[in-house]
Image (cartoon, rainbow, N blue to C red; front, side):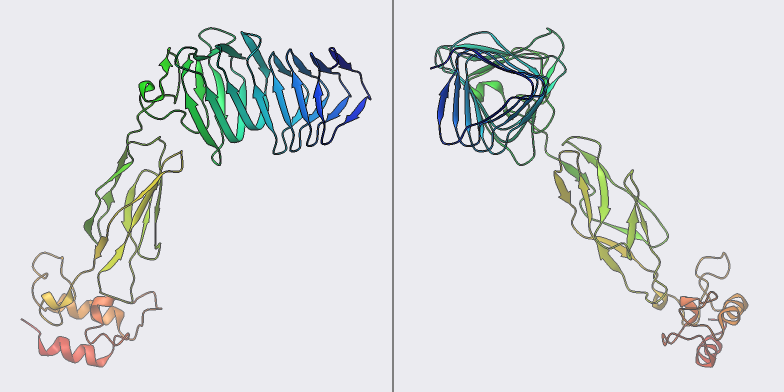
Length: 344
């Protein structure tokens, strides 16, 4: 057993496979403490102004954690244990495993506006008789806990106020499901997540039209994508625009995916792009939109065929509708087809 230790500048201390007890530790500016795979028991306070490297070891701390230096978590664990209460966690630290478990009742005050990040495990547990109380050091100013995307959480019997879950949602659902108290001014805690929904789920759109998609639920903003950009493209606001393929008159099918800022995603059913059907008009009717010419084969159709004559899909004057025999070239055969139906 040792009393409180102060590690001065340029002091290097390395521990491996050992259990150490110290009432309190202050790692001075320029000093480095490598715990490696050891166990460090600190009933009182820890101050980091130099460097503390944990590797695979464990720190059991009963008092304050103050980090204004550099903390390297490795894959180790920091346990905030029963003992002193309330205690403060100040500065910003990134933990691999973070546990705060109390059987007797404990209050942990996180420094307001600062972020404590957890890579792998966040475990916050009290008991029915003695809740683990989480507060900000500045009432009304949220402290932040960032449980990273790869992390797991175990939260039960806590009382939380003035805290923002800046990474994953924490304790998703009503507070009562976690035997806990939502004491107010919390963000992304005890929240029943509204499922991400996209509308329409399936639809058809004509080649020369656009289609507006919308999303609700999840966490905005949303990001839109289409599975095949040769069929259609979609804007950042969810407007789908078909892409014209001059080599085909067949309908095409794509799907749309919307993703929220928590990386949740939903994909639609089939979205069908409808191409004009030349066979629905008299053979040789190239123009299907102009008043007076749309439903018959006439001189304007002959004009359009002449403009495209000799072209293939790679040419700038190509007109798919003028390729009446669908052989990828506008030629004399198409002219014969048009002539045989002229006036119909």
